[in-house]
Image 1 (tube, helix red, strand yellow):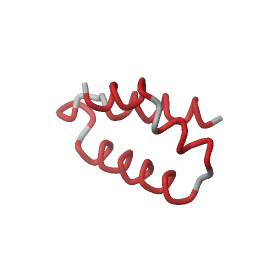
Image 2 (cartoon, helix red, strand yellow):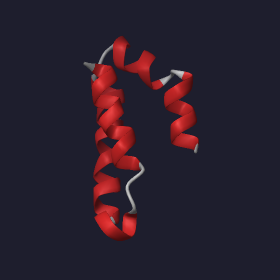
Image 3 (cartoon, one colour):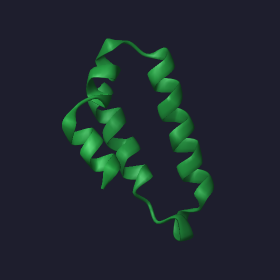
Image 4 (cartoon, one colour):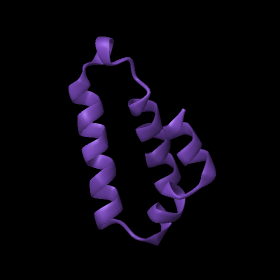
Length: 58
């Protein structure tokens, strides 16, 4: 589901770049961009949810 996919994306964005590499984070951001462009309203609603935005900010 969209909720599970975004949970994994959040986890990947919070990885230590020195341990896992900046490339992993870059690919994750590219995936997030592709999801926003190609997926439907369910993904957009999950992306706009307060919890997701707070976690990206923090």
